[in-house]
View (cartoon, rainbow, N blue to C red):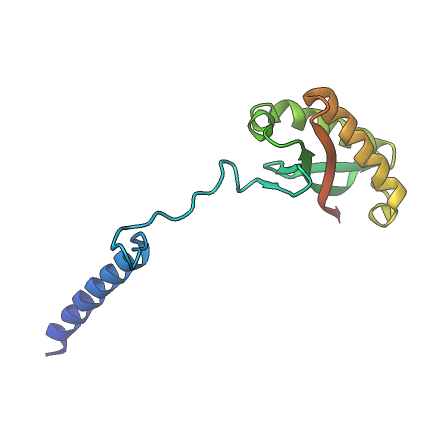
Length: 162
């Protein structure tokens, strides 16, 4: 008896789940006209950029940067940094097209900063240390992309000692 009921329960649950999914995923219907209404479209690249009232956009670099901190010819720590660019509106597509060159320039700058001791000690609590890094990153971004890059923002920074 139970062997006959269990498949029936699974069948009903599957049908109910399918109907529920169809109702959930179907486009909303305007109650007055009975017509389907499309959800508002996100601007292209909206998962990476945000426009502000000040006329700038923030474009998030797609991956984090991992920088080794070398002491006594061995890796003493790894620093992981997430960056975003503050730009004039409308250049996000160009940034994504040239991201490999930007990443290369940022990595060179980050490695130089690490080799000068910029990631030693309490580096992330010293404003002047991070200001030097931001300035250096902004300068190389402007060399690659021009004056449309207004600033480089450090979104996350973590140091993991080995």
